[in-house]
Length: 448
Image (tube, rainbow, N blue to C red; front, side, top):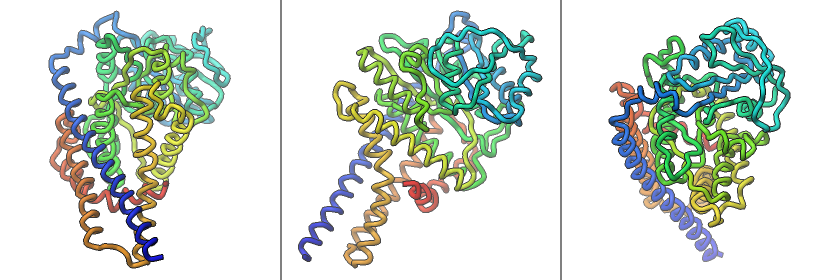
């Protein structure tokens, strides 16, 4: 019996060591590959003159789609912010998703809207559209407002896709704040595409918590005041500046943030638009678009650029944060399950052989394995079979690796774009990296 217990003990230890080694190797690769991607982007972008793109009447057309539900308090200011974006060939589509407040009435009054007859080009099935509005004022000629029956974010986005006329769709949350040159910077990768078709592109998302905002613009950048907010700021740096830049460079990116992403309209329509039966509609759409291109055997790319283009509010309470992360985890599970037949299928190239397996083994199973590790620790502690010297060395190594990865992400972020350039913000991020394993990480594991 004792020999059997030792076998079980050693097997569990070896499994954790093998998985941990794989995590170290993957994140080491991400760190190196992301820095290379950031440096290459900065070098290629050194002499870019965005005024040429801004003044070019033949530049690609973009349609911004912003679903809105009960946003009456801020909807007028949010739209005004979108109207101030620097880009010539742009239309702004606000989709009122059956709001129960006075959102649509406020828009009608503020922007002199009137209902018009409108030919809808797209054929994606959606809930009923009540009306399409445009402004009588030429100053707001870019604005289109759609009023529809409530159907959720994915359904509202599909209505926007149907109504849109641009070559590319910019799908955002209506309460996000875009940098005024955001569309200009996103237009460049689409203008540069050659033999590979760029089907989707995203930028870095930052947190607006504690930032000074005037007239729909971030005028003074500050790190969030609360520890919870600062930890999410650090998390966003690791996710966008390291993770997504590395996977973008490796042609393995399968997630463009739902808060701000650009998609090729023709491919979106060919794929049937957003899936209304998942809470992770943004990730699922990118996977489906990549699947479509793989099956058509056409060369393509999905990119992220390291410019901070969008600002959003992060949850400042544990309850709201847990709901958000539960939604993200459910979305990941639903996407992986729906497309499970592509996993380890060489027919789908890097998508099937690398990207989906990574998301399954590290993004989905990672929290579950870590949670299981805590359970095993307490069982071994109860049985008195822990090798304490080995455990403490391993524990210190894991903490040090996590801390160094966060510090590395902060430094790469400074190289890519000095958003948190104030000394106090830099020091606050370093302190947050030290505290995160003991505060933020265990809290997130509760969702596993």
